[in-house]
Image 1: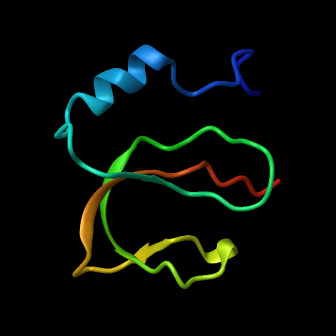
Image 2 (image 1 turned 90 degrees about the vertical axis):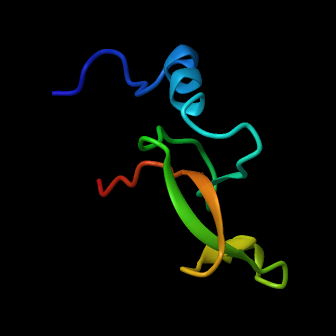
Length: 79
């Protein structure tokens, strides 16, 4: 059974996490469709900017030779 508080992070917790990274590091978020979700613990990832992508594929895609960013990825639910 899920806890009564459905939120994973508070502003204070997120600020502490973000303080571990350089202030000029780019940040990207995962997304698609409507609504909002909790997110996983932010982590480093390399991405390539692809502005020609359709909106549903996002402006960035994973690329091991890309720019290092901090990724805030939404929780995936399978219910």
